[in-house]
Image 1 (tube, one colour):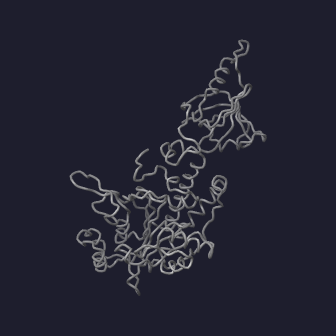
Image 2 (image 1 turned 90 degrees about the horizontal axis):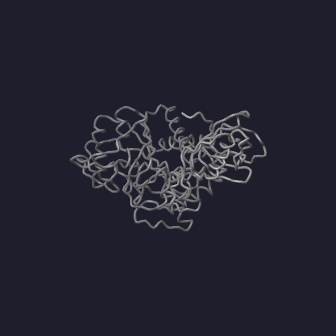
Image 3 (image 1 turned 135 degrees about the horizontal axis):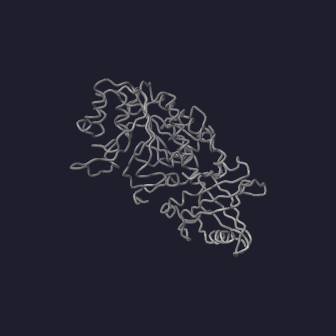
Amino acid sequence: MTERVVVKNLAALPDGPVTVSGWVETVRDQKKVQFIVLRDESGAVQLVNPATREVDPEVEGSAERVATTEAISALANGSFITVTGELKHDERVKLGGIEVKLATLEIVGEALPETPIAADSSLDKRMDWRFLDLRQPKQALIFRIQTTFEHALRQYWIDNDFIEIHTPKLMASASESRAELFEVEYFDTKAYLAQSPQFFKQMAQPAGFGKVFEVGPAFRADPSFTSRHATEFTSVDAEISWIDSHEDVMTLHEELLVAGFTAVKEKHGEQIKELFDIDLEVPSTPFPRIPLAEAKRIVAERGYEVPRADDDMDPEGERQIAAYVKETFGHEFVFLTDYASSIRPFYHMRNEEDAELTNSYDLIFNGVEISTGAQREHRVDVLIEQAKEKGLDPEELGFYLDFFRYGVPPHGGFGMGLARVLMLMLHETSIREVTYLFRGPTRLAP
């Protein structure tokens, strides 16, 4: 491992010899002095080299200095270099008040002179050259935020005695429905890519795990080209036993998000303000809760009639109710509750007082749905009847229904799209910006 100092740690060091490594962001090649802005994974620092253009045989090391000067003049932006030199604190230096006076230069990885993308390149073009796009501080910060956010969620779960599970992504049958399902060859039969860990996280309930979570990939064969859809995405899932209603799941959900947002604000709040111009807010609890029927009435009063033939809300309706909640409660989140059974899966528990409704919710964040949660139906006879109502064959659900034949507690949970949360947190316009390598109907590379 190269003994180098990362840029963010230079300010704490005294003046003296250091080694730094990174890529060349810019070169200013003047007659008597050369400046390089070198960036590594933690930040940028200015390197300075007194230019030596001609060899003086009477000066020791003159030939080496000329070679270094010529090498810097020929450096292409993006080249990876290692430099040794003298660290100097100087408040006149705009970039962090420090610079490194260069002594030796090693070109570790030379870049081609023409960079294929620029600041004004299209999103698709940047996705083609994602590894270069991710060098930008704003893009790199997204994934530091993601790391902090996920770690905070995991810490919450661990502190609250959850068990982490890793469910299979190859399945013998659909995990949600046969719509939007990827089919793959599997030896002498067919397999399907998991649309969610739904069945398997429910399996943990009769297994006696009590509370479980998973952060893992999920797949939807959805031909959508919207800014919020992907064919492969990271799903954040949790399931808990011994609940009284979906209210218990919502309480878990909002506490989890508060933990995540708090950690991100504490660690990255200043950088988010600098690079995204956002004052990140930690949401207050409880989040507003509005039954779907009431939400539709509110939206209609705002002048928008949801045009759907079914009982669901549409994207514009979600934006409208989010605007109402922001105006009325000053909140970026809202739970829409009590969805109609006609648009919910067979395993959602029906409302005790009105079987046309379910004990379920969608969580809307800044006008976009990021999650669905519910209390699950745990009575096998009711499950069978509800599956039949949905046109499903109980025999095809045999392995799933067996979970409920040997004792299972009342339980519920949610699945949440990680990239959607990040997109809305940072006010980005596309899920592609916050996905390391995006997969969509027309993108399988890089």
